[in-house]
Image (cartoon, rainbow over all chains, first blue to last red; front, side, top):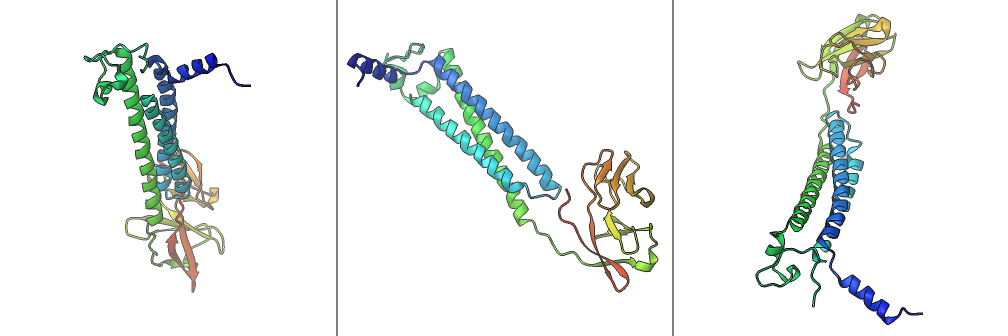
Length: 88
Length: 181
């Protein structure tokens, strides 16, 4: 059973309505929190790996680099969302 | 016709909504909420750039580890085996002058050699075979004589170990253990 025409129009109008600045600020604040957590995690990874490297242990460098690149990819995904938010 | 943002305070001189304005006008708004939004957006971009820099740093460390050259060290005769009593120790420099090492004879056929500098602040360590440890008098640190691992005090990393070989009744240093932690 399909939705009535008035309901469909309401949904279409709502989807087309731009997000207000307040709404965008909330979304952006949430994204910034996630990005900050990921960057702090990367900083910790970098210092721990550097400490191990200078101590002669390179066994953790590979997994740490993979984890750091994973964090970067997540950050790039969130940045893409920020750009999309801009275009909304 | 596009719908105007209810919070939009910026009104361009031509009266059209911001969505239809050139990009530069969106990046230099004149109302505070929009200005804060732009500032936060730029902050997120900066953080992602930082994240990229950290990833490059990780790859640099990985590359350094892969390409680190580990030269084969020359063999150095330390002493004749008969010249070292059980429980006795000999100081020597290996692989270069100014890099002090300590050889300790733990038993008849049991020899160990380590870097003679404490891994805390490089004070010279003293072998104490009767107590099964190396002792650092600077900050009362101690290391296990058999493994070189830290036992007490501020040091957290073990003493770097020297690889030994006995040939024709003489003790030779032939290399350094690569993994130090």
